[in-house]
Image (tube, rainbow, N blue to C red):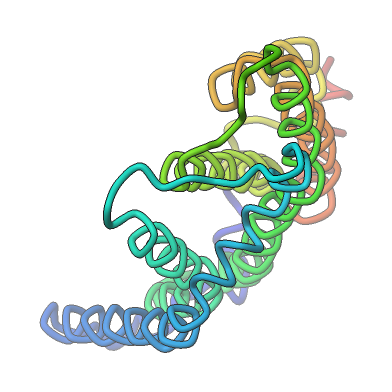
Length: 263
């Protein structure tokens, strides 16, 4: 697979005219500045609707709380800081495609043609998978685990969660599921780099199942339901990554066929 980097169109773009270091530093500064501006542009309208956004975010929990139940604020500034923090984090997430585009525009001229052909689909798919992981957490995982937590509360215990702690919890879950859903991208990159082949990855399935539940145990609350809701999708995405690597990485099927013939 190393030959994939040296195909006929594999010359680095602009390799015949090397740019001085200061030019690259200026380009990096401009790209970073554009990424920050993009985040700020998204943040301004989101900050205006910060309270409404927090109400929407707390919906999965409030839907399972007893009648009259609500979230509480145990700190003086929490009613302002929690929605403000949510708007800030959400602006980074929403502007992620723009930020990744700036990263891609900075590194693309220094890549081989084969790397550029593979890189752009990976950037797009990684963004979509991250969003998909967050959506899965909100629409599937949160209703299940919040319903479970509220239902097992001892008799006489009023479930009233602090808004800051609730925000930290859901943001952590969003990150856990968003990153976990990047498994196919990681697999394609490993196969492309030549570390493993799809056939080798297929042989690791029993270990992946155990590892998926172990990671879910670390990233989710200590209950079987939420751990299973993370581990099962991770394993399915592992299988999807093996399938994608066979079709996206040039020459990988030929390498596997050659190894089968040698064995």
